[in-house]
Image 1 (cartoon, rainbow, N blue to C red):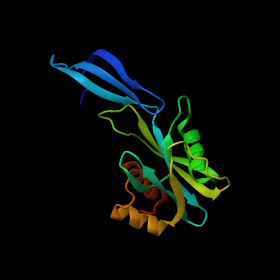
Image 2: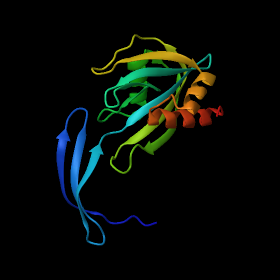
Image 3: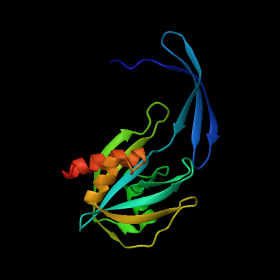
Length: 182
């Protein structure tokens, strides 16, 4: 399939904050039709980390998510800062959220996070030989507790749907497959 030529007639930022950058474009399609309000969320992307300890346990977090108004079971994750490399972000977020660091890192997957309405990518990393070396250092608005979960228990939660953030579901399956544990 050939990429269609969409023409941006105008572009305006509706929101520009530390947490959200939202752009409103007016698009002209190849057939001349127009979409007056096409919204795009811009971001440098985010990371999700599947951190394994040397005794085969996975670092997970129980985190309150305001948008859903619920506590989710997830893998450690976070937003990439401007000019930050994805791997540096993954290491930083794992340490900030859980206090864990890792000896070896492996990139598993890079995919568009929401290609219909966003320009960001999700980066998934495996962190090998994770161990707790620091205290948590949570950002404002972060309310979470970390837990070590046996890999069989993680798989059960993943398969049953109790790991309930889509990014963690995708990262969990991709990481288990990379490890040959799916």
